[in-house]
Image (cartoon, rainbow, N blue to C red):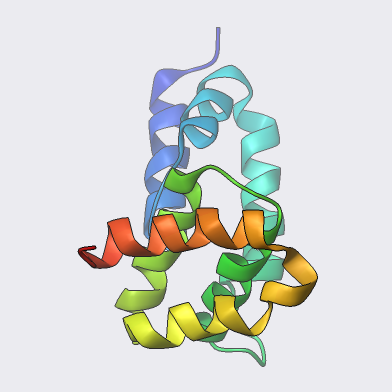
Length: 124
């Protein structure tokens, strides 16, 4: 059985660098901390680490891709929350999803709009 202290450290690192954690992060940290460590390094190299794109832009991309792939609403909301914390406005996030509605499809767009409304407090 893996060390729970290592798992907790990995979960805390994920929360700090990503701005959120999901159930899959917690499960993997407990079940396979070695893999989780390497996955965290990959995420830093491709997503959370500073390169040419700023974090706000990366979050807008994440939101659009995860919406197009019909990710769970909770996962899309996590990225919306980080985008808002990085300075994106609710309207910018919605416009990013609207800009890719044709290639992503209306059913995926529907899920993204639901996540956006839930996370931004938009009432309808």
